Length: 438
Image (cartoon, rainbow, N blue to C red; front, side, top):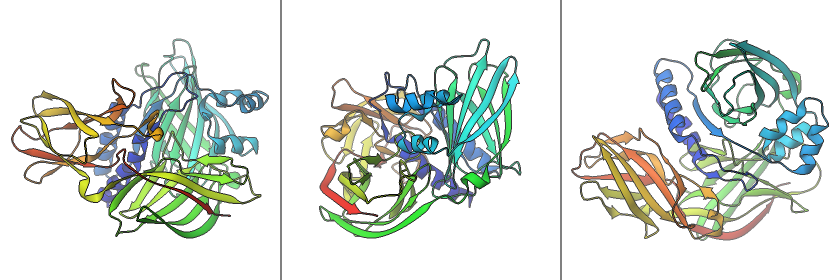
């Protein structure tokens, strides 16, 4: 059972790797890949001991701007201006606050002159968003929360995907994402510490307003099938929560291509206003080999008028081209999908090889967009399967169209090739699609 939970959490985690850089950021902040790997391993060890699995990924966000109109509105509410920095343009959360769908918490804990305070929260049966602040003398301005545990009223760790967003002036946000739907706890307990503040720990307990948050959703049956360049996919249902929308998509088993990700999926109203896929946080979860849930910003509080599902581009690759075979001894690619992928360099330290690949991206949708090309497992020449134990991710190359994607392997010598499986790639199928959903 625990092995299956681990695999599901890893599939859920992979959606984090599709990190778009919001244009409104004054400076882009790196995804904490090494830290994410450390937390993933810790949580796997926790599972082995019998506790609930959780994968924690921290994204450090600096100097965030939101729309002037919304920022002005928030600044008029006593104490609510602190949320402006961490909403970061999520239209669903903005709308929730606008409709007073928020719980004031105001609980704190102080240790060694530093105070961690849970200010407010937004929640439903699929997700909890917690806004916090940190204050006191000698606080590390770049500090983020670490070793965070979130427990329910029974003292059990919540089975969910955690993510965090920290702002330079001590404001932050914790997202607790249940995936499709979980049980909203009656009470939460947060145990955490702040990086750079040695031996400083915090624990804050507070109730969850069940009357406000529980059973808030709208389900729309779709069952609409479309064919894009010969590839069949069916949109089965759209579930609208206050914190997000969940779109269930089924991919036909007979498809010749693996469909990785939509470039521009959105829900639109008649005026063309769009609610896009969540950019920072969990943006989806694989249900099984042919079905997934995609998470979009919510329009729960907009009840009037028709809604449309729209997209025009999907990243996809022929199923028989998903394997990359690398000769470690001679440092050359034996098999690759096409010439968009090149081996950039290999750094070897003992039995660990840090691989870097150059990926050519020429499509407009790749601008300011990063995603991990490879899956988190690999095989040696004898067919043994391993999990990567180092960093995976991507960053800009020397040229504007270049992306460097990296992958770490160990437990293999220089003899014989290794095989890595592609889970995302900059080849596409395209067709303008617009389906009425309401």
